[in-house]
Image (cartoon, rainbow, N blue to C red; front, side):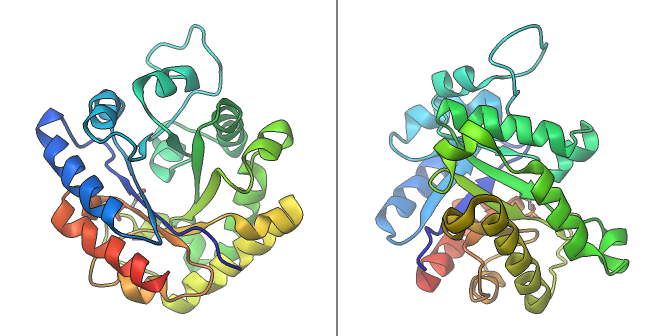
Length: 254
Ligand code: 13P
């Protein structure tokens, strides 16, 4: 089965107008490369300017509120993201699950709100170091996915065309550590089976990305693993010179 390949950058809390040249360089090169969809999830303050700088290139958010509007100081809803020019959003990143105490139910609500509004979603799951050492990582992350996946009308509208899952082991994020290709393959196969359980045959079309210390030096090896359909890249997505070789590796594997 051919699934769409996706390489998304997560700029986290990095980037101001001074970095728009990197956005332009990434978008221009990515638009020339076939076989892989490239996107950048920038800070909320940069979405509008980034989207204007690179028309037609997918610019995304890193979080969304599940409500349509209301008394939620500091939060941003789907309509605002659309208005700013975003076409996708990350939900459930471990840094938000941890620092903002987002649980699976709130991640599900966010993914449903995003899909219902027409945004694409990259839904993140992943285990801690202690959970990996316990030998229960596959069980724990599978349960996390089951409880975070969108249901109902949102799933009907967004799966399989607008949902992607990102497996990001927390201990691999920003550390330079990466699971063995065997462990990545085992986890992605388990997540694929959970997607089938949730969505039937449509689950086969949802890309599963790997995230956590993806670099130009390890990308090809990671993309060669069965059921790895792309990457969610943090630090190495900030500069075109670091990010584009990762995109090229994905295009070569496509
Ligand atoms: P790094 O690529 O910096 O490890 O970050 C991964 C990540 O958290 C992407 O969402």
